[in-house]
Image (spheres, one colour):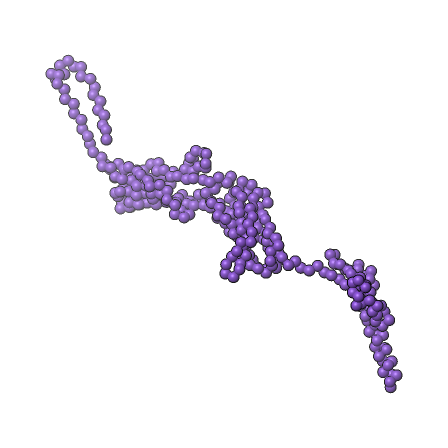
Length: 306
């Protein structure tokens, strides 16, 4: 019985040896199977002393250890800039700030200047699994949007900042000091210019018309006016009242304006027409010449001053 048990143990040891031998191919075959970038290490006295001289079922073990590169412990965040309504080659350089969240506050990680032609920058060596966001320092004349607003993860990420030329509207209000009558009109012309250039008419004139006999205030707007031209130049605007007419007979109106007022994205300007009553001035010339006995009275010219 004892001999039978010994025989069974030997048989099991042989089966286990064959299984392990099949599981460990030759060194050359295993090295060929390694993926690109992996390293194979042949065991030996200098590498794994504990494996030296080991055998199983009469088979010596020449072990191959495959080392796969570990995933990076830091990430990179790229900030990319795009433009709308302006030639990117003529757009101004911008400054962006990368911030990391700490509790409820944000701290600056780094700053970068984006400019033509790349319009991008990558912040590297950043701790992964932290929350980051990107800010752009104020740029006059543009509206900006940033996507995503925040990021927290273990992989590289790109933030995209889109800058669009800001547009405004200029609203004109016409005020009459008296009821001008239905159908009274006022025409306004919008002018624009960039630095170093002359004023030029921009778009079509705006005509404001009273629609009732009791109406004294009329309002209209010039809309979708860009603050920056396609070459990156700031645009200035002004409005002038170029003509008006009243349905009231016997009165003239004097127009005055209080100028443009900034109201966020809207500019406001008010023109007031003040009634001037018409009067009649009569002139009379008296002669002391025996009723024009010589018939040589010269023509008389009168100048009226106000």
